[in-house]
Image (tube, rainbow, N blue to C red; front, top):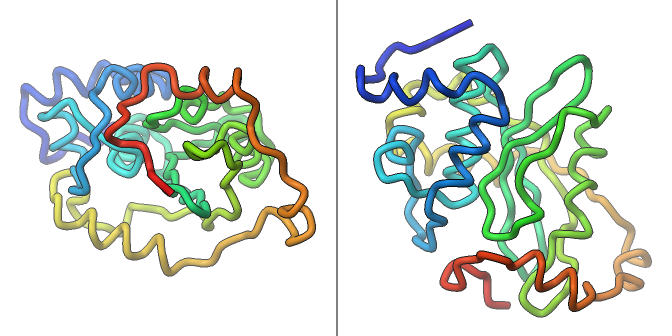
Length: 205
């Protein structure tokens, strides 16, 4: 299924190159990481070549929809840290993900995970703040963006999607006793995760 209504001829020249989930990821990897608080719709991401994780996830969901996947996003929620939003896709019964991140380990996932929780847990050890705390605690149910009219083009619609992510049910990943036993990330992993990061975009606890 290829849905191109609303895009300009120039935009379509780029969009038609996104023939696989990984090609969408490669485009996001090449964009500048945004440290701004503003949201960009998929059209604005394409125009500005800039995105943060929420922009990137919605962009990826829109592009996945172009090639036959449902436009689904998941909000991975943290303490003393930014949330991380990913676009998920399902192939041969397994889930994968596309993401824009300031951290090198919080991006693409191959479609090899049997459940969304399993996919989310693949991010756990690499999800930490500048104080080296492992901060991921829960994740939202997947949100299907199909019902958001013109979300590909409307920056204001991004606010509505963000608000919805805050209201939908979540699944907690750990018990309080498990959280108390968590260790800080080691120095080597900490440095590798921050390789190439935009320091202005890092959450300061």
